[in-house]
Image (tube, rainbow, N blue to C red):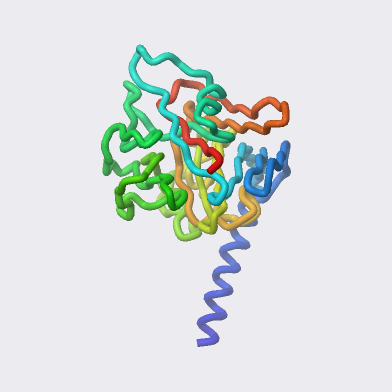
Length: 263
């Protein structure tokens, strides 16, 4: 039994060391600590094997102090574009990213709940493997099959694919198709992050960065979900104190935003 425990521990240590060796921190360009519950970091990581670098805007927050908000930007040609910062500020959000996927006519892909209002329906498309939502109990990130609909959900998005589950990178993620990415992740102990990469990265590479402790996040990621990326990728952070916001604007018009507002 002791031998089995030793072998199991050795395997875990080897896994963590391998991940840490694959991607390593390469410094922070910017860091703004608003409070113990809200921190902005612009971080770069590097893969020593080939010198590949990935940079990301990251908004770290706690579920004890913040709730999720889904901001609906509307659909159809008659819906006027709203300024990125205006949309977040109008919803009372201090940080946020672009949200879920949408059809060419800008109908949301899957169920969207914004301000308690339900739009579209719950879908089972393979891409939509995860559900992120906020209710009176807090913030939740679950697999699609584990989701149980109930009254009181104020904000919800279906998205995918799942990047990290149970502290491990999900198998079968694409190793090609590098692009800008948007994601939400948690250690499942009340710590969360909304992030958007400003450089291209594959889904598999992003998952590797997230599961390696101290690379993108200071904690070990338990769960992470990919949001709409590519030309939709965007990021917003309101530092306050008379400072201008941190903005990474998407290259195209999106349907919805995922932000955080004080409880």
